[in-house]
Length: 150
Image 1: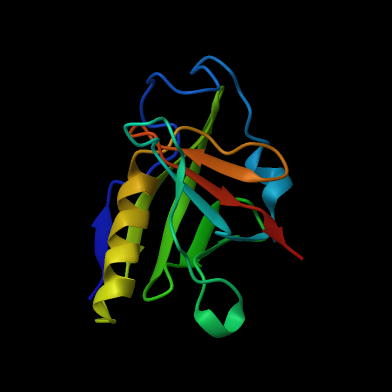
Image 2: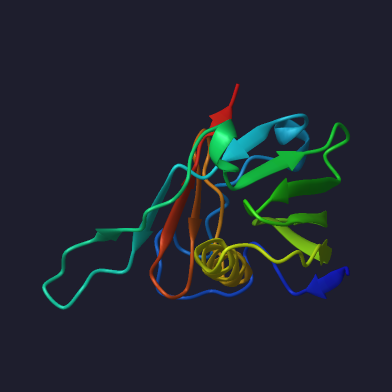
């Protein structure tokens, strides 16, 4: 079963750094044929101001969360560690957004389904990718770090 969702980068201007007027993402053409893996997920600070880190699977044997830019810079695809997804890239003056998103809906362990749901939810609310390490800022305070895989 394929499902379309409203996942996007740069969806809304909120109180996050960098400011919404900054263009910090490289052109999609510079991201051609690159593969990115989620290596760290900072949750919003708790009541004492401490940043918490979410446990995430890493490495090929653990089915990591990955994003791959295609050879022409027009689409991304990837894995949530449980299901696959794809989307079209649209660029504007501030960076790029994603639309025409589709993903598979296979059943996985409850822990993987929760991680996938949360990742896709955060991905919907993202702010911008940044240079060599793709940092996704969500409007809810999470930061997801996706360095390129070589």
